[in-house]
Amino acid sequence: MNERLRDVYVVDAVRTPIGRYGGALSSVRPDDLAAGVLRDLLDRSPALDPALVDDVLLGNANGAGEENRNVARMAVLLAGLPVTVPGATVNRLCGSGMEAVIMAARSVALGDASVAIAGGVESMSRAPWVLPKQDRAFPVGNQQLYSSTLGWRMVNPRMPNEWTIPLGESAELIADKYGITREAQDAFALASHRKAALAWKNGAYDAEVAPVAGVDLHRDEGIRDNTSLDALARLKPVFREGGTVTAGNASPLNDGASALLLADEAGLAAIGREPLARIRASAVTGIEPQYFGLGPVEAMRKALAKAGHDFDDLHTVELNEAYAAQALGCLAALPELDRNILNPRGGAVAIGHPLGASGARITGAVAHQLAEAGSGTGMAALCIGVGQGLALVLER
Image 1 (cartoon, rainbow, N blue to C red):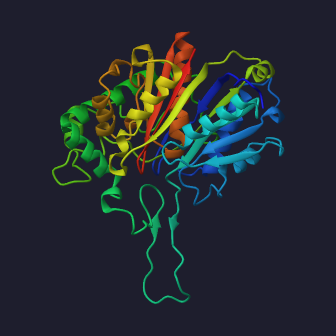
Image 2: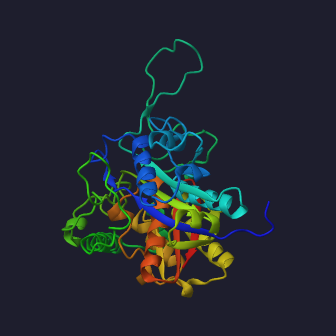
Image 3: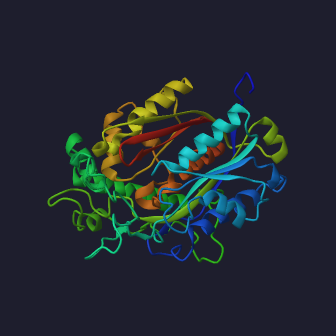
């Protein structure tokens, strides 16, 4: 092992457009979505011999269906990479894609790899129903199917009830905790859609997004250009009678994939490209499961401290918007964070949240924003179901 950790660079980052649940990408298997972004990523660096890729790590929050347990290895083979290129799948639920980036970066920093690919994939549309095996053969009576699309399933009865509430009810608890009104959540959601629509109109995503072969989808499918506060106000609360969380101020269910090309100095020479950014530090933290949406708060503070920065040093921040209430709760808990630099090109309420892909998507977004700016420090962070937070600091 080397005595000194190596610098780890984000050479490139690419993602699919994000599809709606049951929408344009619902006919595409998750292993094909993942294979597509791997192929796109490598095609954008033609000087790199794919055989030099030391490992491929992909995040995926499901794994119960067409992912075939290890979607990373499936994607490597389907993308036509040499069979000598390995692949492993990572699951930290909503943070899986970022966890894959962190693990790959750690491998490069330690000298175990020189070039690695990290990312994530999720097809929530194609998530299967699960039928548990019974304790005895030939059971009498009806059996229960569980949806594997989102949330708790087959919960251990020893788990406290307050931990296993629906994710949207957790967002309601955060709204209660910080006095976040329905109006504030709807205004946040509207801003997310407007920023995303403007970013697409101005070509801000041109360098970041590659279409899926055979699919007529050329931008994120969930962005509502013409939504308004009046339209959002007409939506009914979903999780609590008289509540504040609606389908309009929460991230939807989505399909998509993302991938980043990571390298050390030797890898950069083999790739022959200027990197977008450098990975500086990361952190993961835990929190009470019912307040999972506040998980990023301490993770962001911890990652910044590791990087030797404070919030005033940040030029851009991508905080995954699982719910408007959750994002606003994090802002309330982080008064030192300038909300004017938050999600400048829209967030998950508008763009979407394909669970295993989102962490890599927002990491890639920060890298592209820093490259466009020419210099600066950025951060990506997510809340994670069952009470965790994950954050990553990048520099250029």
